Length: 316
View 1 (spheres, rainbow, N blue to C red):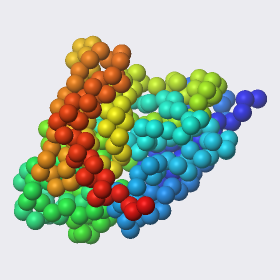
View 2: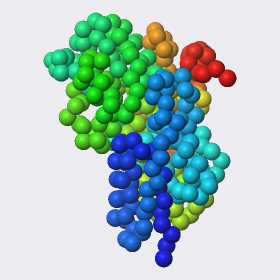
View 3: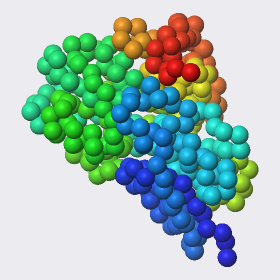
View 4: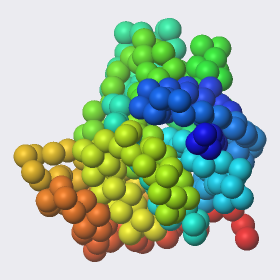
């Protein structure tokens, strides 16, 4: 009898929906395989009264899951890929990237603004977001809006919106869709306004490095086009030495056999925004990401990021 496959997951509703999808797809592919889910809360789930950027983001939503794999209490962990740091602990690897849902950011509005778009919201409208990436880009394009941090899971955030604490929220379209809340999407935000987070919309399955049996089991969920796009994005982020909670945005697309990566770094006030693109053969995605990072650094991105790290990082 084969050993059961043990999946570590966050306890949040969205995380469990994603993990159950992975479990069900693996069960379809491997008849008779026993699969168990071990759910737990992470640091990012427990601290809800502090802005994410102030906590520090080295494995904010992943450390506890990784610890379970390292002590052989779990075999894989399912992550929203945008939450998974680009540098993983020794002994662990990114074993699989699933097919991506729409990576766009989405506008969700209070009922009183159903006739508005992001561009037509009135001056002083309160926009809820916990993402510095979204904050910086939207400040750049819409300086007349007011931005307010919002924490909690997606359902909690929507409840705060409906209670009138915010005029609108900016959330990931993929997360809303996976929760069956796609009808709350009022507008998909165009990439010309807001580049999405690295890996947004895809799931990453992390496992122990060199575990051939587990790698063989999970490879059925690998989606090569998504993996190439996300590996380019992650190389870009890694080369900039950025993390999940800094104003770095991306967008990837294919033009024939060419992969095109657009990237952005912005100051927190949105006044400085550096944006460029790089392209190359899709079979070598990481080289494209590295090249784009070097291009943005040459244009001053490094100085912007140093200022941000000094501002938002917690004291040592």
